[in-house]
Image (tube, rainbow, N blue to C red; front, top):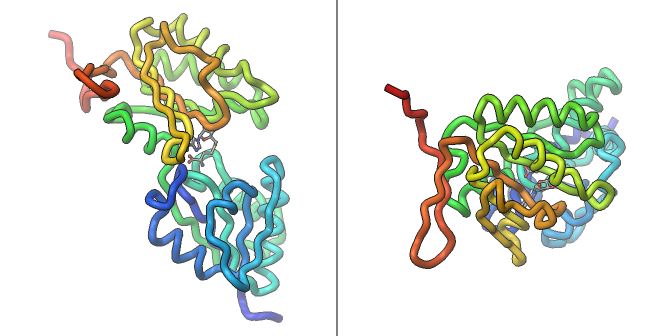
Length: 255
Ligand code: SAH
């Protein structure tokens, strides 16, 4: 038996070293092995003696099981995700692998280290659009039928949540965000603020503030996070620079 290894599931934030937590940096420096999707690993400085295990984007369960096997060999593994590892990312794949896997995997030394999620970074760039009740919906239909996405979008619109939309488009399904906007336009006011936040925290960051009427779904790609306001969400114009967007902290009671 080798000395016990450990698994740390680490969020790298949305991009840029300033938005990686000190804890994440410490865990990455301590790891003997880094496991993750290649573009995330490329964000991290090379370190002598540390082994990198690059995997594709669509093989999350295989990546999780690979990490568990490395831990059983006594390695100290950091499994990295963009943003927060618990938000539409690797942490859930690891716990699924544990639930379905070897009983002894449940006793592995394992911890999750949080990161700044894309919706928080996008919100920070524009003001405070998530200032009151909100939800997050992934538009990816890899793991759920599109009818479930439609049901959740409609429920969120009817309950007047601010909605953060992850995975708005993919190379395989570029039209998902188009369909989502069509559904929301039927349920919400045309003047509802919509934030497009692309590659937040990276060099090619691009933010655009629209309304549901003007929102162009062609603007969204795999690196875009979209925030659709509630009926309370406000756009505050400024003389120069982009306007502020915020959602007041309470709902006004009608007298
Ligand atoms: N765990 C990640 C989300 C992974 S799902 C997190 O917490 O942020 C991938 C989706 O996240 C992308 O399609 C996009 O909608 C969003 N995303 C990730 N990084 C982003 C960034 N830097 N800027 C804007 N959106 C981003």
